[in-house]
Amino acid sequence: MRRSVLAILLLLASTLGSAPAASGEERRAFELRVYTAEQDKMEALEQRFRDHTLRLFVKHGMEVVGFWKPVAEEGQEGKLVYLLAFPSHQARSDAWSAFGKDPEWQKVYAESHQDGPLVKKIESTRLDPTDYSPLR
Image (cartoon, rainbow, N blue to C red; front, side, top):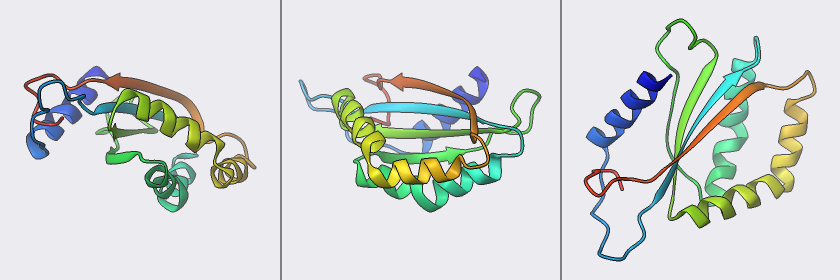
């Protein structure tokens, strides 16, 4: 998975950018998430993101940088990768807290689990941009 994460971050750095942070200004915080879907649940997981989760992310101040599926390699089947950006690490914590408490999300989550869970494993990596990163 390490190679896939690096490839995604390099692609982002080459295609997106923002002005450098002013001296003393807090840089944005990023979160890379990798979901491993339960057997035969990827389509339902993607539908939940497409139809509900993305809109709720925006509602709670989460900037969606992008979603990816790893290139078909052994061990990468059933994975969905996405990157979120936040104004700060505190904003990230606040956004996830509000998202988890959102009645609409709780309803969507419960409904999507009627036939069992969609996700087997979630990996989350919090990231700070370097001072030389084009994506800050």
